[in-house]
Image (cartoon, rainbow, N blue to C red; front, top):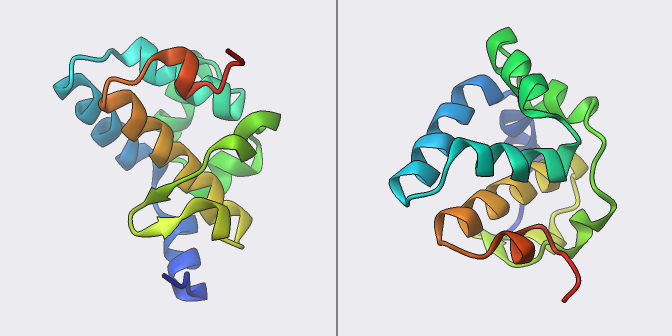
Length: 122
């Protein structure tokens, strides 16, 4: 599936502040916790739970959210398909980063072990 520039612009402007509650609800429905969601976000972006909460309160969009993130060097190990897109084939950096987060949240909601989600060596 081809990612268009229009799609990339929609993703950039999407409000992380409005998406975070949906991500939280998704993982909680599956028996996971806000602390686990925040741990996944911290692993990917470097943002602590307190920093994430401030970004949510501020109304941050995805472009701002990832512009200041300290992306984990192992993020490139996140592979697979999310929302019909193969993550490793997405050329736009911001869209790929957003899909990294989507994939990690999906893995968390599906009950995957935290060590596997955070791509820790066996």
